[in-house]
Image (tube, rainbow, N blue to C red; front, side, top):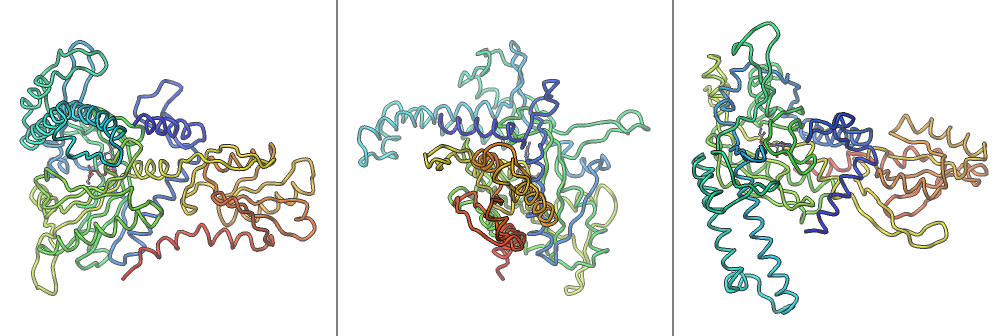
Amino acid sequence: MAAQDDVFKKLVSHCKEYGFVFPASEIYDGPGAVYDYGPYGAQLRNHIKEYWWKAMVQMHENIVGIDAAIFMHPTTWKASGHVDAFNDPLIDNKDSKKRYRADVLIEDYISKLEEKINKEAEKGRKKFGEAFDEAKFRKTHPQASKWNTEAIQVNDRLQAAMREKDMAALKQIIEDCAIADPESGSRNWTEVRQFNLMFSTQLGNIAGEEGKLYLRPETAQGIFVNFLNVQKTTRQKLPFGIAQIGKAFRNEIVARQFIFRMREFEQMEMQFFVKPGEEMKWYHYWKAMRLSWHQAIGTPAEKLRFHDHENLAHYANAAVDIQFDFPFGFKEIEGIHSRTDFDLSQHQKYSGKKMQYFDPEANESYVPYVVETSIGLDRMFLAVMSQAFQEDLVPDADGKETSRLVLRLHPALAPVKCAVLPLVKNDERLTQKAEDIFNQLKFSFNCQYDEKDAIGRRYRRQDAIGTPYCVTIDHETLENDTVTIRDRDSLKQDRVPVHEVAAIISSRIDINQVLRLLDRP
Ligand code: GAP
């Protein structure tokens, strides 16, 4: 765990040092847990969005994309249930004045029990080697079995309290487990109460409650309220989907783990409208499709897993998370939810407008059911970065092994596709030729021209931002109009004619080769 914490810390500082992610308003010490994306981060995000949009919208004739407003009529959030039920259990420590999520305090307590068990198990593993039986150890080791039973019991109580929304029961668990404020050690707690996660603001021209607006906590509702507009203008027949990428805001009590849980983030969501009764078929279809989307861009299967929801939301009849193995363990990256006809029916009720589809085959009208896929762009960014970030050994100019930091990003996602490097700076014939090549390549993809420092250092700089190809202009270039293309991962250098460079690199960074992997009938 300590080693993984280390990797995570290194990744966070790499993101800052190399222009991927900065703490927001840093010169004022920021609002905390809010982040700005730097030049390379912004490019990487755009490429992730492009991959998602193409896979969902361009590749499906029955999915269309929209871009709805962040401000929605406030009744939207009454209808969707967010005003009444989009809450987290909040607890304050009276001494430290710090705020916590009661369920997270309890989860952390359970994790600590797990850590203690794992530490003991590690000792056993060292002592007995291959013969060590962890399941037996958990049951029979006097201390570990006690911790194991306690972890199971506390988790059962937590799940029940969250299911029943029983705030008093959560407080009781905190007292029974003698959970202290992690910062001050104080056990002087307030009662646990529900805290609504929506940010609100006020319209300029209407005073009071009437003019209250919310920043959307999910993009999905912008899709639901536009269901009829989109269906009629695009003449789509069921089943069909509406996709959207956009900002969402949640006043998270505890925002942590870098860009994993933020108060301002971006979602890529798709609502797939289906005939009632067909939702489970489509739920399984989208589960499989979304898993393939992650794998096609190079995420190894063992880094991904499904996790069924233990407590289903009142509107869902099935829900699963795709979890990714982040440096801090397996955590949700995407949700796939069968939301029944809840949202459209609620909007029909609150707006008084029919939210129905006329099915020409069945010759009847009904409110469609919905299967949703919802992925956080920032979590996908973190997953991509944490998987790409590696330290390895490469030979330097004298053939000695030196360590390098490299981002092994999929070439289609890499922010900069190619660096154009004259071998030396003090030969104008080389720099002029390199500039000419840069000026040709810039029409095809994002390139960088760099002539400063020794060639090895320039390669290292490009490795650190994940540039998959470096084109080097040397003296042979002047003789026969060829350059070398260096591959970031294999370090192989191929000599090719200058006029072929654009086509070679374009074919290797093409997102279409990834999309083709998904296009299985
Ligand atoms: N419309 C359904 C919905 O919003 P969700 O499970 O609450 O479902 C979907 O969110 C995805 O949005 C999550 O899987 C996660 O990737 C992302 N997400 C949610 N809250 C987030 C936060 N505070 N910071 C970053 N990403 C978040």
